[in-house]
Amino acid sequence: MSDMMLLAKAQALLGHHPFTLADARALEALEEDAVGEEGLCIAELWESALSQADEDARRYLLGKE
Image (cartoon, rainbow, N blue to C red; front, side):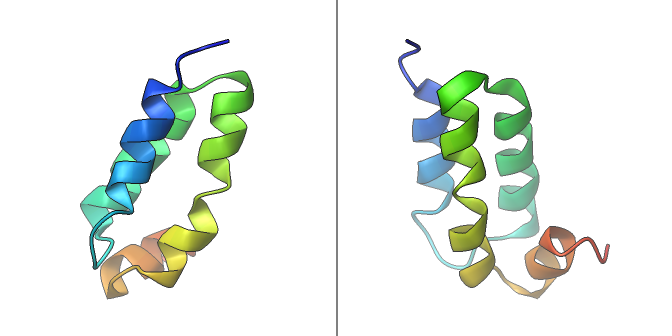
């Protein structure tokens, strides 16, 4: 099992408000790099990201950018 370092980085992105467009892009990159269970755990963070996203990040997350 991996040491979940990418997951820890992804969770850190959600540790401040607001969640910005740069944060959204970073979360997406981390998810792409992750494999297996770690990737699934990162994917579960998107809902939380959306709930604390600023306007630019919200549009990006909803695919409107």
